[in-house]
Amino acid sequence: MPTPRPMPTTDDVTTPAAAREEQAVGHRPGTPRRPQAPEGGRTGELSSRIARRAAEAHAGQPLDRLLAEGLPGNELTTLLLHCLRQRALRRSFVEVLDHAERTPMTHASAADARRIHAFDAAAYAAAAGFEAVDLAPVGPLGATACAGVEPNNVLATVRFAEVAADPTTGLALHAARRRRETRGGEPLRFCASQRVLRMQPTKHPGFSPHFRLFALVTAARSPGRSEDDACERRALLEHLLVWADLIRALPAAGFRAAGLRVVLSDTAVVRACLGARGLDADALAQRAKAHEPGSSEAALREASVDLPRAAADYVGAARSLGLGPEPVARAERWVAEVGEPLARARPEVEIVYDLARLQGLGYYAGPFVQLVVRRDDGLELPVGDGGAVPWLGALLSNRRERMVATGIGTEMVVKLFDRPTARAGEARPRAGEARPEEPTP
Image (tube, rainbow, N blue to C red; front, side, top):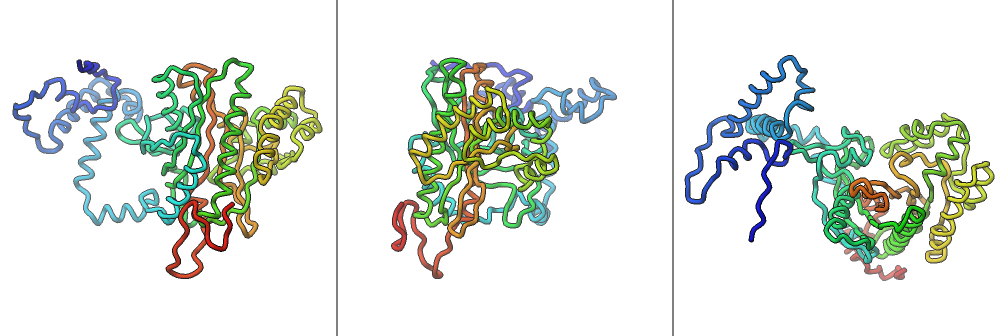
């Protein structure tokens, strides 16, 4: 027996009011549809009625407040759809091209699509223990704002959605839905490659507002409050092992990766270090912009902060700074549960600890990391990061639901680490296939 469809409400913003009104009237198979009226048809007619009602009911109210708060979501969607439809129909090919030329977010990526595919193939192979997910290109309006991202940096759509700005947001929603479906508490591990769009201005030649990322997400239910942090550290260690394996495999896929440095941090320890210096950690963190290289260092320099940024001895550094017993204990657990196991399992990876990392300080909650890849000519570039975030617990109203997300900039690796062919026309190696002169790691 088919499940009855729920009745729509005024808060149902996914269906425009015009379509909903036609649903209410009902269209029986075999009966002719109502002829479409000019200038937008039913949508145009309904938009006019909505506009008249709004003008009468909200007379004198500022237009921006009316659109943001006064209208139900379905009526706002209908109005905006109608207005943009009219504008779209008046545009010519020449105007569309002019718009495209001055709008970088519409330009194709400068990266070779085959090389992106080669990187993704290597990444999926390294993440064999994670379920691969092909995410939707959009998410619900407000998803990234709930995650702490400024809404102006995300492209919102007329239908109360937003273009994906980070695959970890989509994976968090996917994990929450899966948890609701299964009701079980077993760890969920997902990986995804996704092209995302961010609206911050791009100043670097060859880079566009949209780019591809490869992300890992682990959702784990902690057995109790005392195990919350340990649960996150275990998940993070799993991620770091995957990234180490990926970097080790990249040369065989034709990329100039020669080594990995993992920079480990903890938001509680960083805040304790900055607080001991009498500094406002949140104010400093706001000055560290992910899309502005060097902004973290500039903020620390202007605040005269001199804290270890690449300590080999995390516990010793924390003690030398005179921190209290809890930050020192967190440092000890970090080393025992992440640093030392990673060093034993992947001895080729360099591991250091950053006691003053600003980037991501207001975004992550607990352990967070940075991934720095060394090129074969010695150049080192940060290409990934991640850490624990409280989103899953908020989505499911259960603080025991813990989530760790990490990711690498696929596009950056392809653009800056790709090895050019030695001769024109020489075939590149396939992912996982070594060149004759290069032994497989």
